[in-house]
Length: 165
Image 1 (cartoon, rainbow, N blue to C red):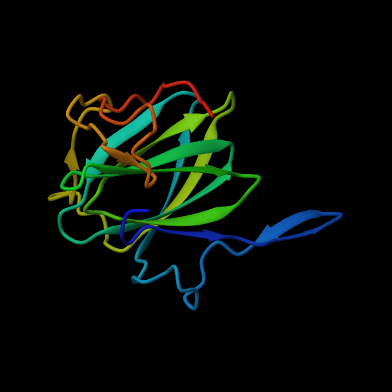
Image 2: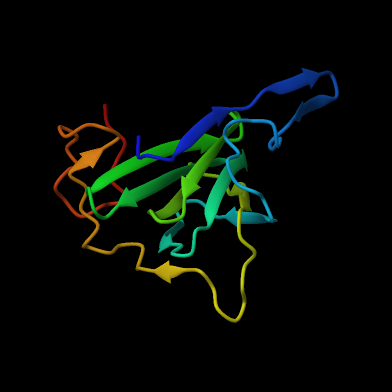
């Protein structure tokens, strides 16, 4: 896993009414930054929202509350890529330091609902975002999730590469 990326499973408390889950607590180790803004994103199936990064220290915390998403973070210096699948059924919070190129794709056949928290307020006049196209051919991982034998290594990142085992 890329340095600074943290995945924390969340606990569901279920009863006959439904369920309740805490998605952010100041006393959890995963939250290493002050959270100053919360956002909600609904993304339709197979849509990719990538690539971007933050150069002024922003950190993002992602929780998929409905549907499924695949988050990817890419370290341009080491050419390592982290790939994490989040679902509304298996709730987790993922910390992604903003200096990595990152983005996500809604996977499955239903819209995905993503709640995310950030450590810096969005500045409408001077956003802390650098962007690349979702299909940028210069994002070529040499290592994916710590593995060099993944068939996707050494090729431009393909968000639509079919799942494999």
